[in-house]
Amino acid sequence: MAVTKDGRKIVAENRKARRNYFIEDDLEAGIMLQGSEVKSLRQGGANIAESYASVEGGELWLINSYVAPFSQAKTFGHEERRRRKLLVNRRELAKLAQGVQREGMTIVPLELYFNPKGVAKLKIGIAKGKKLVDKRDTEKARDWARDKARLLKARG
Image 1 (cartoon, rainbow, N blue to C red):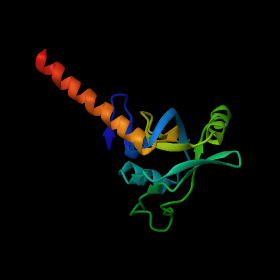
Image 2 (cartoon, one colour):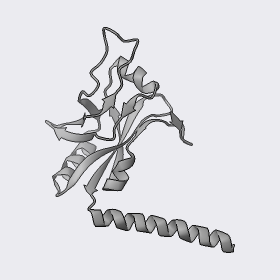
Image 3 (cartoon, rainbow, N blue to C red):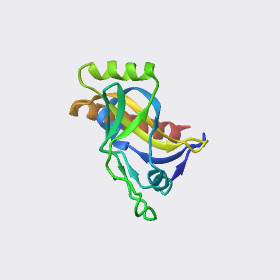
Image 4 (cartoon, rainbow, N blue to C red):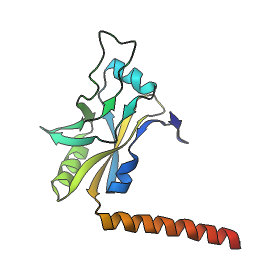
C-alpha cells in the first residue's frame, strides 16, 4: 500500500482512466463496506480498473469493483464483485447525474484509499471518453515534455 505526502494510503488506482478518458471534474466519495471488505482492503486486495459508477434511483453505486475475499472471514465473508453504495451529498449527486446525462459522459473511479483518519474513500471523476487520435495527441505531448526537460537539463 502506497502512502502519499498527505497521509492517504492508496489501496487501488485506476491507471487506465487518465489514458482512456478526459477527466473533467473529480470528487471524494465515501463507500459502504462490510467488515471483511475493510480488512481485505487493508491487506491491499482490490481492483477498480474495470469498474464504473452509476446513478440509480437517487443513489450512487459502484459497479464491478473487485475486493478480494478475506481468508479469516469464513462464514461472514462478502461477495467479491457486489454493487457498493457510494456516499455523496445531494448537491454532488445532482452534479454527477447532470454530468452523466450529457453526451459521452461517465463516472469513473480513479483511486480507492484510506484517508489519514482511516476511513475508506473513493475518488471518482466525471469523464468523457477519448478517441484514438486524442490518445495519440496526449502521448505526443507527454513525450515532447519529457524530451524538452532532458534538453534543458543538458544545457543548464
